[in-house]
Length: 230
Ligand code: ADE
Image (cartoon, rainbow, N blue to C red; front, side, top):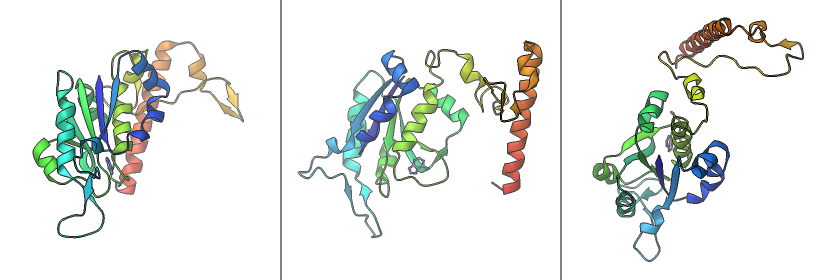
């Protein structure tokens, strides 16, 4: 799976890309992440990428020309143009079914906004998929792009090592329940015991307990969400 991240701040990524599962996935050739600075596609002498909004108002808007030219140039690298995903609070809210949908793409171009966002013609011309990671405003799309990469790579075959692991994740499986509680040693800590059934060795009973737990947690969260009116 290939990700191309188009951003004004590529230096935000190496720390994240160099850790844990993602680092291994890249080393093993399962995932490729390319960082592209949109500023490299600015043609004026100051390499400017933003300008004041027409009509006035605070902040700056990212210009259409370097952005569209950056996306088009990157699409031409490689044999498939890939799906362009614009990270914006105005996009479709990211959920596990959307993560699954994105994981079905061989290539994603993640376009990260900053400031007051992109000139609207970026959307008119490129017609990107738009994704929001939640109903709050970030300083830019970069953290959102990391969230997309982080959630999608779990579904890339071979990345987790044990394929059962992703199937057991919260929001996965046919009912999209939350994951059951997990425990490891010690059996007792400050008076808190590991549930006896998990020590029983009876796999059938353990599976049944986990199913009940998972359902209970899911209901509990639904009730909590409903009570708070979200
Ligand atoms: N950029 C700014 N806020 C965002 C959000 N909530 N999701 C994705 N990209 C964003």
